[in-house]
Image (cartoon, rainbow, N blue to C red):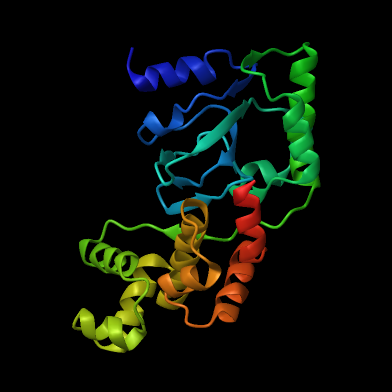
Length: 264
């Protein structure tokens, strides 16, 4: 049986069930989609999920809601990645625009407690069982919490020249990557570089640089014992206050709070 046929059998083989899968199997799959809506929770590490348009980063104690038939694949972005997948069939009574949009959200205290109660559940749960009703209630809760989306979503491209630029950015985050520096490095005028970058990615160079630096900071917090000052320096910030403010702007929390959450 091919891995994609195994996927269809495990998730969509019983269309009416809510499926809970705790094994780390999504990482093995190429770009794929499900007939069910998917709740992917990150309990350790940071997940990197790629769609056809964007690279999405799901930090520890966050979840991503994916509508049904949304093509994606899970990339390896952390040495210690642990996730839980819950796959939900359509429910007319759960009709809400929340379920039509891809979004990343923090796990609230209430959702955390609900998940703890079913922490040992695995497999398919059918309509009529109390486990099914419990998980359906969990699904109904999601839009009613009205939480802020995690806003870091990096656009992707097949353009070889632009991918060369993006690789250079990722490998030189500690450098002063100004528009002038990047334009000179790639033999373009500032105006041409700015237009090229924005037209291809639909995001400005400055905004892309902010997001990729904060992503790298989150990785360093989870994978190293570096101080906040050292992390800020490694990603190109000489001012820790500026780093902290930008981190909060993009993640809705201070870096110290994220570090504390990662160390639990």
